[in-house]
Image 1 (cartoon, rainbow, N blue to C red):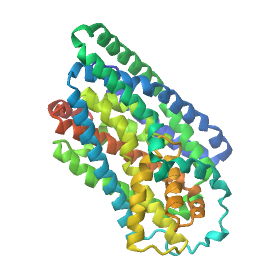
Image 2 (image 1 turned 90 degrees about the vertical axis):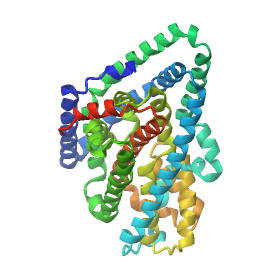
Image 3 (image 1 turned 120 degrees about the vertical axis):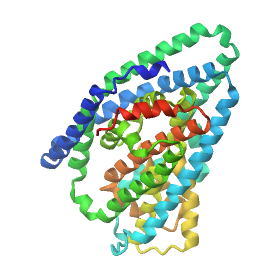
Image 4 (image 1 turned 135 degrees about the vertical axis):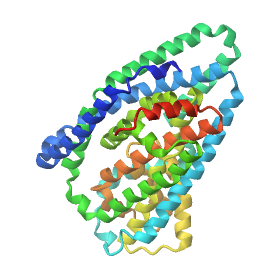
Length: 418
């Protein structure tokens, strides 16, 4: 796994972690004290994400092609893909169900007594337009235009072709390995700007939306964060136990990626680095290359929790009665829309708009209630998605007997201090 040697995850990594935390705090101070300056810093986060996004296609492509070509077993790719899809469906559905149960217990929208006719839905025009292809009717079209899946498909085909000519494909594979080293080196250089991206992202969020919106919808915000934490430490913690690894050491290992994701509200920003870290942890390259990117489309655990809680929140806030059958129908619609909106900017909010439009009973105008706090909710969604897909990759690698547990324990042992 040559790509796993390019980053220094020791002292330099801990320095980056401290810098990101400091940037998050400074960004919050700037956004709160000087909102206009905080809003003006948003390009720092956007530029960082765009730079990383530009490298996603080649990083995923060379990782999958090289891994499959060296493995030389096409059945392995099909087996990995099937196991991953089953895992994704089970845990996405579990996340949706947990969000539904918590929303019924906590009832975050009860007592708001909002008349939907008094809400101005004009600010939702862009979201509703983006939501149209994310409805159940347009799911196939949305997935067909998902660039992540197209990259994976092309890489699998390329790896399959090279595996047939593996004896003569040595120079090509050596080139791919060299390209992977170069790409991860570039990613490492870009990651040095992560504190600036964190500063810009948090400063914009606090400056644009203000901390007052947190108080207005505090019950929903707290419920989502607590529910996400229960899902991570409960459900995902059990999965990690079954793999012979505890969850907390993994979170320490991925702490930089978690904080960067929290600050930039983007899992794409850390995808190449997370792939490399999981390879170094002991996951086989083909598993990492197939499972982690695909999980960004098919395994949105954090988004799933948010969608059911936000849907019921709007229904409760607008006094829209929902029977058990209605809620189960919402659950079924969300199983489609949560995946159909993947790859769209503001995917969680777009999927929510698509769900309400498809269901028809809950007023779509109720989305206005979430506009001011959605960015804060999105932080929990993004972090949960990152952790969920990292755990999924380790789980699939374990089931495929492609996970070096001894190596993982050695690596994690070096990250005992936060």
